[in-house]
Image (cartoon, rainbow, N blue to C red; front, side, top):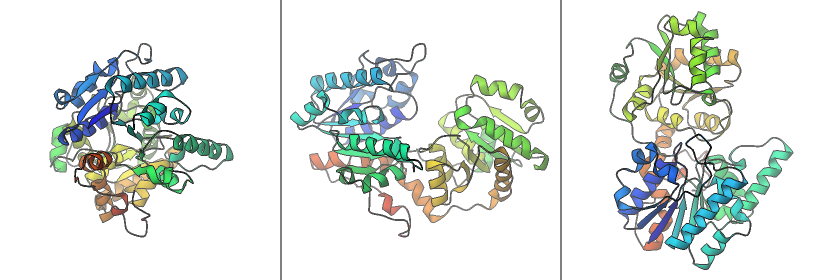
Length: 421
């Protein structure tokens, strides 16, 4: 079967998703075509994620997308950018003539395709099935005001009117909303894992040795890109408030490349915390081993993201190594941490509340024990399960008896379970 993967963007998890999908489809004997952007094909991320599959797939990388000026990224929002994406996809359909289309980041065009357009017409005329993955959306979190509820209703209606044969979402709330919607969304929507690689076999002592950390310290961490979107200022303010009540060996580990804004904060506003040794910085891109090492080395991991309502893979990583999470009490993070006993949540935008919860989390971190539900939650988000779930329909079409993988209803006790994704 000739399969087209359409992914012009290369930041975030986009190309990691492409790799997992392409690798599984190649193993299934499919003829895999990747339609991406020229910038993506020239990026460091492209080589990093696709090196081991690139010789087994066909790559097209036209210079037909809108780029972000001096930055390296491809613009995916706004009418001009979306129309460029849809035009590029249409040209790709006509040139490659696929039998099946997969779009790993479908949010930019998901609703636009609900209006009359040549892409939908081509797919229907050529009996080409299509699937897209959604990471965000108005339906991914609860609404408390009429205006937002109306926007959600409109978004769902446009989504249902698109050409999609299957719609995958990585946020349980979004899938649950689609399952209740009085349209075909209830039958074509699926819940998809947000895949992470398996952690290495590494003890806490080995992890701390790897990163040059003291074995006797109590460590609370923020891991990944260290910037405003990750709540770095809220975390530093809370840690500063908590400082008089901290133990001498309590440390805040910032593991990952910091933005210039973050560096300025640490060199000025929070200089004393750094000079006193309370803040430890590993300010660079981390290797996969170092990323896992930072997670394993922690006694508590934080995700104080001020406004992030969607899936956060660092929460899954924390659960995978049995380290409790202290998350902001919003969206997916609050839902998953509370539902599966992954740690605790609080309003991290309120520094006094955050400070109290930091102290409590450090005091109880050593006694944290992952639940059986937490372990199933991690298993659901494995790369193998992601690949099994996303390739299920193609396997059906070509007559392969592939594993269906782990369903969402397999993850938690029947008390929480609804029908399978």
